Image (cartoon, rainbow, N blue to C red; front, side, top):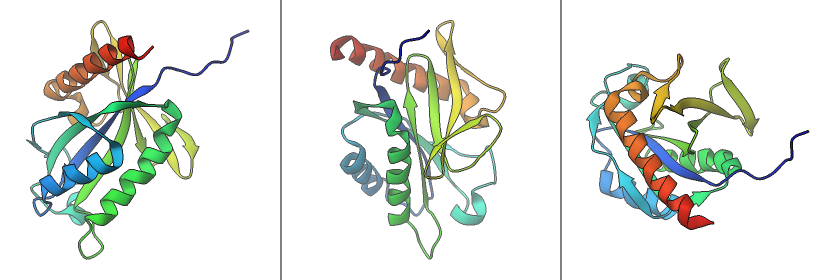
Length: 176
């Protein structure tokens, strides 16, 4: 029989899709106020992997990732998603999002994102939030899965998550 115990805390990340009309400095200040000290911000890259967001957010979207210093309980994923939605609401223009904030948790084994959309590989948590297993760590790097979003499969983005995981691993060694 297995013994139940709390898992190690996780490193919080947010994946951002940013409309050209969003003041990024204001965005990062709000993320800092709500998620805590930032210890990684990716460069900005063009988001041209899908047109899914264009009807709401327009064209010229940029993708960025942010990681936060404080480690959190893994079961905080739902509250992180609800907080991200509040931040998105603050950047709405005429009822449409201009900022998409997808929170996730980096652990030594995986990257899990929070989403409000159900699908076969997503596990329901509560309050309309599902956990999406996005990347798994094998043989020294994160590996995408068949359902992983196309941008998360990109070598540059995987490299960023490997760097975030290294920071996380270092933090864990000093955590306990």
